[in-house]
Amino acid sequence: MEVNGMPAPPPGTVAHPRWPLSAVLVSGPSMVPTLRHGDAVLVRRGDRGVRVGDVVIAVFRSRPDLLVVKRAVAPAAGGWWLTGDNPLVSDDSRAYGVADIRGRVVARYWPRPRLLRRRRV
Image 1: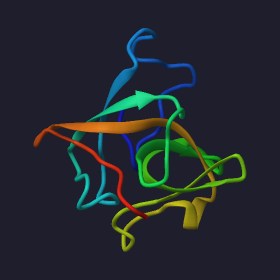
Image 2: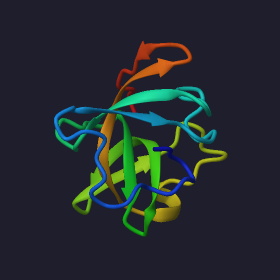
Image 3: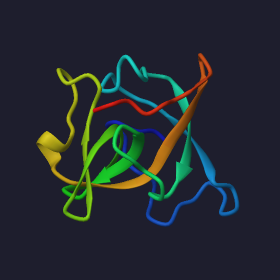
């Protein structure tokens, strides 16, 4: 599964129903410096426990075919307002509106392993 510009998998596709974590490959520069093109991250599926400042995997309601990695900024209209950490190259809620969260990024495991922490927004 890839994000930022790559199509989302077909609806209902799950890595493994019993495992709460999925691996995702980041594509594109919209989350630099937090995440870079080619980084591999672990994502806890679902939208439970998502708070402002979390890095998330989401689908914009206006672009359901596009899976993205962005930062959660604020709850909005039953979904979330998302932005990229690199505003000069990021297509985010400013362009596509409200998004539905598919999971929260908990760690980067390649190439430089580290936990991702919330950031004040």
